[in-house]
Image 1 (spheres, protein in one colour):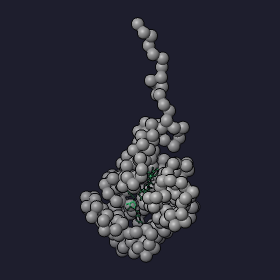
Image 2 (cartoon, protein in one colour):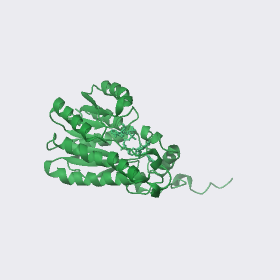
Image 3 (cartoon, helix red, strand yellow):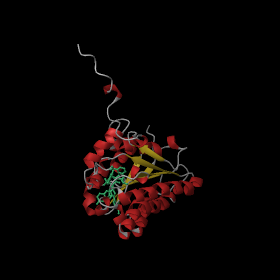
Image 4 (cartoon, helix red, strand yellow):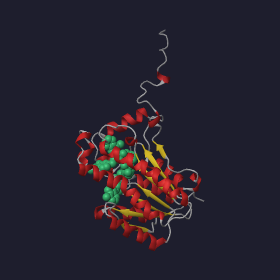
Amino acid sequence: MGILQGKKGLILGVANEKSIAWGVARACHREGAELGFNFLGDALKKRVIPLADSIRASFVEPLDVGDDAQIDAFFAKAEARWGRLDFLVHSIAFANRESLSGHFRDTSRADFHLALDISAYSFIACARRAARLMGPGGAMVTMSYLGAVRAVPNYNVMGVAKAALEASTRYLALDLGPEGIRVNAISAGPIRTLAASGVGDFRKLMEKNARGAMLRRNVTQDEVGNATAYLLSDWASGITGEVHYVDAGFNIGGGDPGVEPSQSGSAPPAS
Ligand code: NAD
Ligand code: 0WE
């Protein structure tokens, strides 16, 4: 029996088969959960529906989290379909492409608002509607990145948005704790997804990250999915308000260690 057997959950942020949200969906489906999804616009509808069908998802509906009316309608449909909810996964971020390079000081008011609205406020907005459908044992997880707590070149206003997202995770945990609802974030290492493909020299970033990671590699969608399924499950019933790193240990390190100990011994004497 799976660790999410019989639970009903919404997963927000599947764009295609590379999405972190799809890694989460695979893990949750494998562990016995019944799932619902959103899609953003008709372009993604035809990508998300076949994926949802492949795991017999009960629910696929449009949702742009920039629009309160659409959030209301989405959760109203979830309530009509299921009546209750056990978990919510928020795997959504957006900033104007131009704000993910160049000088951070040039961030415009509009770009700041957009990044924080879609990437941080939307979690609060969805959490409020989801919590209404949850009882004790309910759980939520959102996706963050190290740029929330370190100054990562070019991540810029998204780092500020992730800092707000991580703080929101703690305040939601405080707010929903009395109702027995847990709220956590996963801080994932870099993964090649649609969102990452819009970023200049992501390959270099991934190579640097792999070198600096304790495991000397990057993480996969499935590894983030498995950790998320655990945080959503009753195995994590004592855990809330946490930011859980799934980054092969990069965040604890001091950067590229250079030559490995096994390679650094003195050369054998020439014979
Ligand atoms: P992705 O492009 O597959 O997913 C991003 C999703 O956000 C898409 O499904 C997109 O449709 C959705 N989205 C954007 N604006 C939206 C809106 N207004 N309304 C509804 N949905 C909207 O990329 P991903 O890498 O899987 O990103 C998922 C999450 O993981 C994001 O929060 C991202 O910041 C986070 N994350 C990504 C990485 C990485 O390296 N890929 C690392 C750490 C954290
Ligand atoms: O959160 C992210 C990326 C989020 C993202 C990506 C895009 C690209 C396309 C948000 N908005 C947009 N807007 C677009 O138009 N990551 C954690 C991946 C990421 O993005 C970076 C990174 C990493 C890691 C950008 C600069 C530096 C590092």
